[in-house]
Structure formats: C-alpha cells, structure tokens
Amino acid sequence: MVLRIAIQKSGRLNEDSMKLLKECGIDIANGVNKLRTEASNFPIEVYFLRDDDIPQYVEDEVADIGFVGENVVYEKNKKVEVVEQLGFGKCRLSIAVSRNEVYNDVSYLHGKRIATTYPVIVRKFMEEQGVDAEIHEISGSVEIAPGIGLAHAICDLVSSGSTLFMNGLKEVETVLKSQAVLIKSSHLNEEKQRLLDKLLFRIKAVKRSKN
Ligand code: ATP
Ligand code: ZN
Image (cartoon, rainbow, N blue to C red; front, top):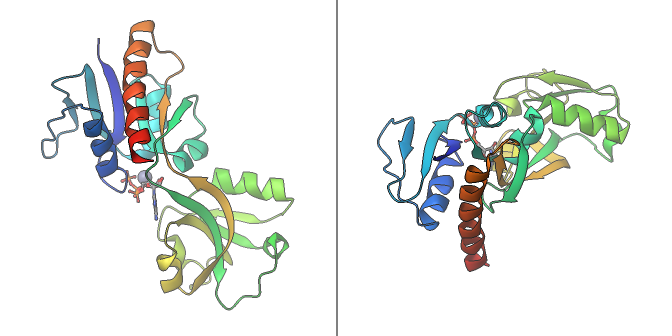
C-alpha cells in the first residue's frame, strides 16, 4: 500500500512542495520530466500535475492527498477535505481597479464588469457584499483587462503587488487570503489514513521547527 500524493508539476508551488517532503525525511528521485515517482524510504508515490487538476484527482480518488493553494480548492469546490495549512504559497485574491479611479467601497463595483480567472469565488464574494457586478471569466493575463477596456476591475492573485503596479492598477479589496494546504480524499482506507497520520506528524514537526 502506498499513499499517492498530487503536487504541482511546475510553478510557484512545486519547489516548496518538494522541499517540504524532503524536510519530512522523504527521499524522492526528481527525474527530469517524470510525471510520477516513488520515494525510496516512505510508502508514498508522487504525481506531478497542473495545480488546477489536483482537487479533481483527489475527489476521484486517483490521488489520496494533494498539496494545492486554498484559492484553487475553493474555486474548484470539489468533495475533498482540507487537513492542514502548509505555510507556503502565501498570496491573496484581490480586486484591483485603475490607479486613476476614485474607489471608496465595494458599491463602486455595482453594475461594473470584473475580469477574473476565479469566477466562483468572486461571484460568492459579490453576493455576500450585496453587489450586483458582471463576472467576466478569462483564463489569463487578467491585469491587462482594464487597460484595454475589457473590464472595469479585475480579481487576481497578488503577493507583492508589483504586477498590479506595473499595469497601472491599485488593490482595493481582499477577497481571500490563501496559502498551500494539504487536501485528502474523504474515502481513505484505514491503512492510508495511518500513512497520512505519519506524514502529518512529520509536517507538523517541520512547521514547528520554523516558528
Ligand atoms: P499550473 O501550470 O500548475 O496550472 P499556474 O500558472 O496556475 O500553474 P502558478 O502561477 O504556479 O499557477 O501558481 C500556483 C499557486 O501558487 C497559486 O494558485 C497560488 O495558490 C500560489 N501563489 C502564491 N503567490 C502567488 C502569486 N503572486 N501569484 C499567483 N499565484 C501565487
Ligand atoms: Zn493552474
């Protein structure tokens, strides 16, 4: 029996995900372009995937657990359980408007068009705020939307804010604070749950050592 874990193949979460497993004492041969690999000293198999696909793989029990951003977990809304915050991949999902706009509060967004790759989260936020805005889903290069007249505002991931600044935008609302989390399938058998408990024990020890 092995625990199958899905992590991001390449991108902002890949390196820290690999590093955390390593800090847990798990040795993973990281072959170039390999899409799956096994650890030599822990019954775990690693699948390298696009982050967007990780919740679905875990819901479908193709993977038992995964490391993925909370932003992706909430957007995809799959039947998976969030088990532990991992302390890396920190960012926020924020609304931004052109630097020249006068923005006082969310009512500014009433009747406006918001471009985002996170339509589910943004729609929920607007409903909670009682704002009737048009959500325009695009798949990337969100920051360019206001400048080319595609939208009045955007909702996108921000860490330092430098991308927004470079595109003449200012951050006006935080919709979600996010970091990488460990998710698990709701249907782990006892043996896999025991392996996960063992991994979690190590993850918590690694986290404690950093505080
Ligand atoms: P993939 O090819 O796997 O789909 P991607 O382009 O969707 O990759 P990345 O840009 O690598 O994703 O971001 C992965 C995750 O890293 C995000 O979903 C988020 O949780 C986190 N993250 C942390 N800081 C940032 C940031 N400044 N911008 C974007 N994502 C960030
Ligand atoms: Zn992605």
